[in-house]
Length: 512
Image: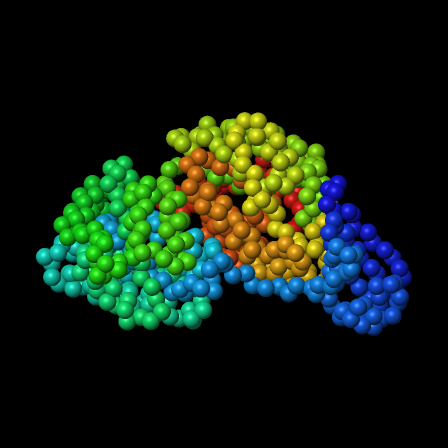
C-alpha cells in the first residue's frame, strides 16, 4: 500500500447521514451526503456545513497553524493549449516543390498532428480538384510552360481552390484556430507572388510557405512508384505511366525556382524540408502555430520501424476498479503477461531491418509500469517519464469506480457527458484533453525515433497515442476499445499508419 494514500474509510452514522472521508498526506476531503455538519449533527441545513451547499465538495487543507481552509469544488473547464490566447487564429500553409518530392506526405502528417492537438486543419489539393473536373489522365503537354491554354486552366483551378481555402478559414469564426493546407507545386516566383497578393486581401490569415526539396535517388524512386498509383495512371502500363510522369517532372523542372529570401521584398516566411526531414531550414517562422509546425517537421522521417502500444500488466487495483492509486501489485495473469511481452518484443525485433531493428522501451513512472517492464529492462534501454502516467483523478485518486458513481454522482455524470473535456476536481485533476496536451512531447519523440519503440502506459494515455497515429477524431479518443494484455502494432508509412492487434494473453477484459 502506498504511504501517500490511506485507504478510504466509510463511516455509517445513520441511514440519513453518510460521511465519506478520503485521506491523503496533505488533503482531507469531507463530503456531506445528507444532513451532517462538521461536528456530526444530523441537521439537514446546508448552512450547518460551514455554509457550503449540498452539491459542493469541501476540500480542507491544513495550514501551518492547523487552521482549515475551504476550497469550493472546481468546475470542469475546457482545455486550451498553451499559446491559444495570443496566437494567430488563421494560417494558410502553401506547399512548394516538384512532383513526387513528398509534399502530400508532409501534408498528411501535418493534418494528423494539428487535428490531434485540437486545431482544425484541412487540405486543399489542386491535383484532386483537376481530377474532379474530369481532367484525370492528362498527358505531359498539359503541364508544359509553352502550352498557354493549359497554363490558363491550371491558374484558374489554383485560384478556385485557393478561394475555397480562404472561405473555409473564415467559416470557422474569429476564435477557432484553423490551418488550411494549399497543396500544389507553386514552383515559380510569379505564382508565389500571386499567392502573396491574394493573401494581403485577407485581414486575419497568415501565409507560410513549406517547400519540400528532395535529391535522394532512393526516396525519389520510391515516390515515383507511389505516384503511379493515383487516378492519372489508373489502368495504364507501368512503364508507359512512368515515362509520362518523368516527362511531367521535367516540364516542372524547366520553370522551377526555389524559394528565395528576397521574395515578398525580403519578408518571405518559409520552412524548407530537405529529403523528408533530414534537414529543415526556417525563415520568419514566428507565432505559436508556425513554430509548432516547424518543430514538428524537424522530427519527421520515413525510416521503417514499428511502434508497439500496450497497457500495463493487470494489477490488483485494476481488478478492484480503484482509480489512480500508485500500486505495483500485479495479478498472476499480469505477471505472466510481463514474461510474454518480453518474448514477443524479442521475436518481433528480428523482423525489422535497418535502424528499426533497435528497440527502445518508453514507460510511465508509476509502480505498475515499472513492474510491467521488469524483464524488458534487462534486455533493452528503458526510459521512464511521468508524461506517460495515468490520467490524474485529482482529489478522487484512490477511490473505486463503484463508490465514485454512488457518492459523487455529479462528477460521474459530468464525465460521462463530456469525457474528453471533463476534468476531475481538485489539485492535479485531468481530462482527456489535458492528457493529449501533456503527451505532445511523447508524440514528437515517437516521430523522431528511428528505433522501434514499445510504449507501456495506462489506458487513457494509450488511447491518446493510438488516436494520434490512426487519425481518430478527438471526441472519439476517450471511447477507443483497447483491451488489456493486447499489443497494438503500428507501422507508419507514406499513406498513413497501419495497425495490427496482437492478443498475447486471452482473458476477459475489464470494463472501463
